[in-house]
Length: 248
Ligand code: 13P
Picture 1 (cartoon, rainbow, N blue to C red):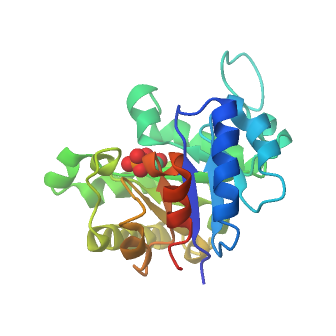
Picture 2: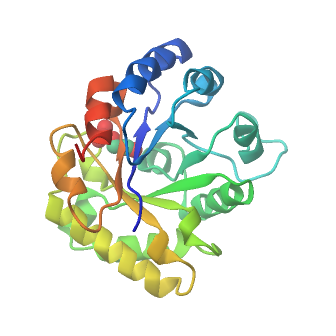
Picture 3: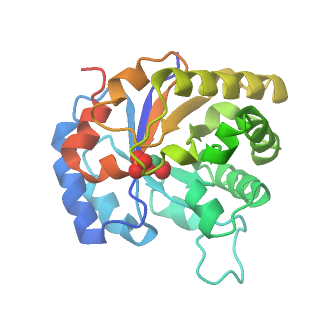
């Protein structure tokens, strides 16, 4: 069976010292967690948070990675740079990066392959907009992302996918348990077909979008949902811990 994975995406919140404070508050609350727990922090927080995570099973993640090994890419960070600091996971293709920073399916694919080559576990985000959902285009949009974002991957057990419907991010409007389950089921089926023989059955798919301490149990009880990618609620220790402890 697939082991659940709950990851916090701090986005551009928390300075390094605030991040350390948050981690110190989370640590005792998630001691007995049976799922994988990850915090994806701003790049500059990585060294301090890494230290603060010592002695816990919480894994360290980043929020983006460049696709080149090195070179003239001012302001960017390579997979090896993350790796050297003990980063294990990296979010790729978050809708905010697609919307505000010109991220495309092509760059998402390149970043994913670069992360894998360096031994990082990519958390690749896909999802439809409200217009697309209301226009009945959800499956079409997801199919195109599936085809482009994951091309060239040989072993899907080494990646995590986050299904984040854009209309549910930061809006307080969560997909219903059934909606999320159905769409994630579609993603898994479509990926099994597109990438047959490449371990898609072992790949974990998270739900992301206004997941919180209240709605996490219902979402996590769905058979297709293997975890959550949590924004706002990951910034409060008791809320994040409640999600991590969804099974208690
Ligand atoms: P919220 O949980 O704040 O809706 O954010 C979801 C998200 O974008 C996680 O990557």
